[in-house]
Image (tube, rainbow, N blue to C red):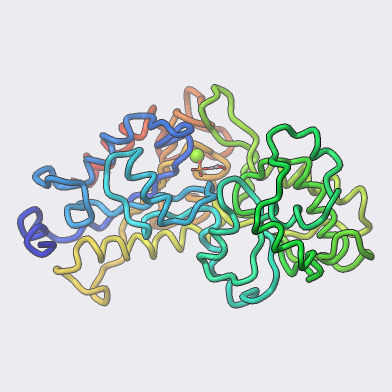
Length: 356
Ligand code: G3P
Ligand code: MG
């Protein structure tokens, strides 16, 4: 059916361009679509197609977000519902997606995963075998958070899993910490992370060498539903780092992933080729695939999305929308985009006019 559908819709050459969409502040605000995003995405499929699925995909695209908290397969399902098109897990690149490359280094080591959603499950699905979410980890240490009793939202009864964990009261050394998504309980997380980092991964014990610390992104702010932007993982990093550096002799060492790192854009380019290959697989094999002439990054954050696309260089072209972090009238002064538009719908309209 795939072959037939492709033949029916497009006996043409695969396109020499692709699109990377930022999510927060471009396609969604909170859980709600923004900027005409469902209509914009639908235009990337053949009109004659009954459904917007990969076999009817005309223009290869990916989601390139610094956000996360659930596995890519689940995010693909959520996005499909929110945006009304069939999205493959391959098309979803989250801030923490590159953490999978670190599996070999920490495969059997105890690691702690921090953030909203299910950071532990994200890491287990990548193949880390000995991962605890910071919720489960903190519950191994009675009284580690002296404010817990005032946090009306926290469950006081330990779950069976937590009880099982407590039989081995986390006597193992934490070998690495991963901030997978935006931390929820900053006061508890800063406390527990300072404990882990200062003691070489054994809270309550002697000072020792800091274990490696990885952040999925370094966004100071991002656009959610509230009119003004909200503090992101970069703001949490600054808070943790300032406190850690005051109470510890050595400065906090860490590595941040996500945009604007150029390797994120290089990886997105490879993924876009794979998407093109899945959509057009009866036309050309990957060996014959031509490199892209242009790749468009549509983002709302000048210092992250636009800066990243600019640093990545050819074939990236940057388009800045006014639906998120950037709300200016002209272009951004420090990180001017190749094009500024009001919405993602306008951005896609521009791209399709230019490329056809
Ligand atoms: O928490 C998400 C935020 O930091 C950025 O998401 O989609 O704008 O890269 P996005
Ligand atoms: Mg954004």
